[in-house]
Length: 196
Image 1: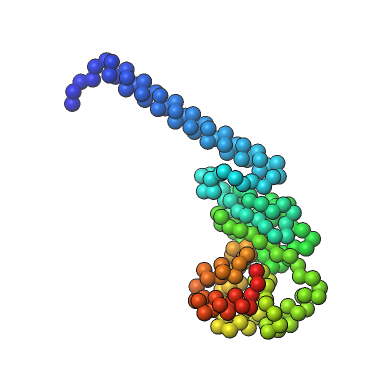
Image 2: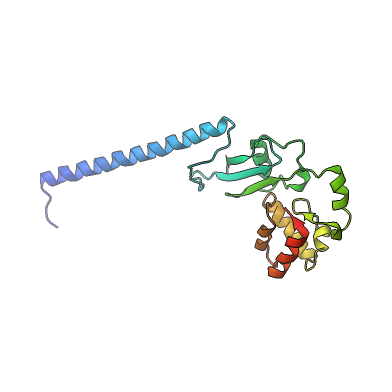
C-alpha cells in the first residue's frame, strides 16, 4: 500500500469532516420535520399530506372515519387500541354504534377504523327480523345472521366477526376476501346479503 502524502491526508480529512457535517444536518432536519408533525397533531387537527406512513419512530398511522367528531388520519403510538384512535378523532358522535366496534382491538399501521352510525328505529326492526328481509349491515352482523347466508357455516361466520373486530370494522364487503376459507362463490353470496 503506497504511503499517503501530507496533502492527501488533509484532503481525506476535509472530505470526512464535510460528510459528518452533511449527515448531522440531515439528522437535524428529520428531527424538525417530526417536531412540526407532532405540533400539528397536538393542535387537534387531523394530519395528512406529505409524510412517511412508515413511522420510523414505531408510531402507527390510522384513518378514523364514520360517526366520529373529527374524522381524519392520525399518528398513534405503537400499542394503541381502537378506543385511543376514536378518542383522538374527537370521540363518537351521538349517532355512533360503538357496540359494533371492538374498542379493545390493537391498531395496525395503515388501518382504517370505521365507527358505524346507529340505525333509525324503523330500520332496526326490519334488520333484525330474518336474513331474507334485506341486506345485513357488515358493521353489526352477528354470527347467527352471517350463518343465514348461503355457504357460511358457524366457523366461517365466527372468523368473519373476529376479522371485523381485529380490524376495527370494515368499510367494504370486498375486504372479507382476506378471511381464510372464503372463496369466489362465497364472496358473491356475501355481496348479495351484506352492505357496508
